[in-house]
Length: 126
Image (cartoon, rainbow, N blue to C red):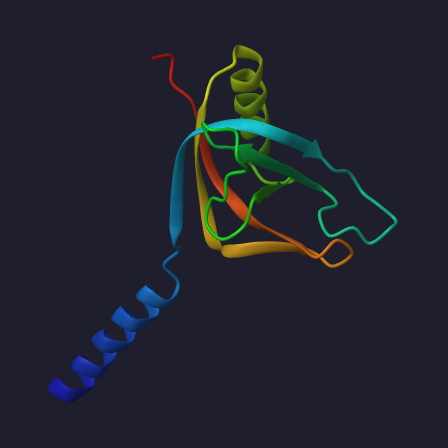
């Protein structure tokens, strides 16, 4: 019986680690490009998504996670808030902090471009 209980808890432990997301945080970024894609007929991989690229303080293109693009589906519950936050930060000239889910990716096969899913975005008035 102890062996069965041990195996049961071992499976639960291993399963919860397997679904744990890796979030990478990147700070002090400026918004370089911001696109909101609608439905497209050209099979573009980022249709129905917000995509963005950011720059580092020195002006170089930032890579948060393993790609320079981030995305969020335009049907996601957080989409309106993230779009508003990005627009407000850009208009105020503020740097942003973003977090990306590195295990959730989008790919555009026509341009061979990949993006990590945007997990959060924020900026500070300091």
